[in-house]
Image (tube, rainbow, N blue to C red; front, side, top):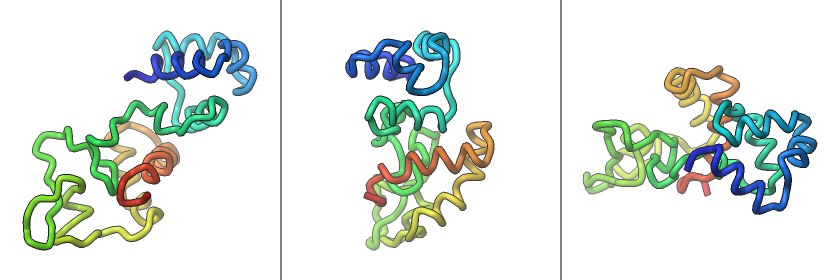
Length: 148
């Protein structure tokens, strides 16, 4: 589901008007309206604020299907020929990519190291700043299977 739809649906489920949400976020009602109409989209940090104001996990506002991602780094398996990790017996592991899970062992043991390593690739792939990439990863990674 697209961000605009999730935002409107969640806001209405919480019984808030666009004006009430805007006041909580210190933005104009028109900004909320533009987000809900799909004219513009807020950055990751504003989405974190929106999630907090609506009382929902930020992952709900990112429009990401977790099952389509490596459950360690968040790399999408929808990328053509995305290589999967391997179990100790050499069989393919469908939850993790080859950069995170090799021969039944994880390459990353803490979230900070993972984020520092992956953020530059996210930055390039998404056309965002390093701060935005780190913020995005910080919002995504804790929801992945390996880090729960």
